[in-house]
Length: 144
Image: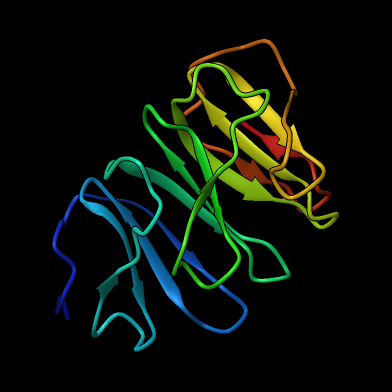
């Protein structure tokens, strides 16, 4: 069941509406189109291999959070990644969620940040730091 997944330290899993499965690992980001049977690396444009978080929005854009180089977005199923850190400090990210309004929230060493424009810019959402997990409640509230 682990053909191609080079690193077994999986920090997060994500799935797109198309059914692609993504694994965020210490060795980079991997995609499976076969329900986890086969994995292929998807790291073109990522500046570091330590990927801590992965999430997708309704438009199948992917968001990857890293430890040290911040946030990246892919518009092509992980083939290429673009760094998007405007407003995020420090760029040590541990968690990502996307709410029903398609706002992206990231948590990490600097607290929680929100983007209302698919990661182009970020604003501080709270003042606490050291966020390692995020979740959405049924009512749409962000839990950290």
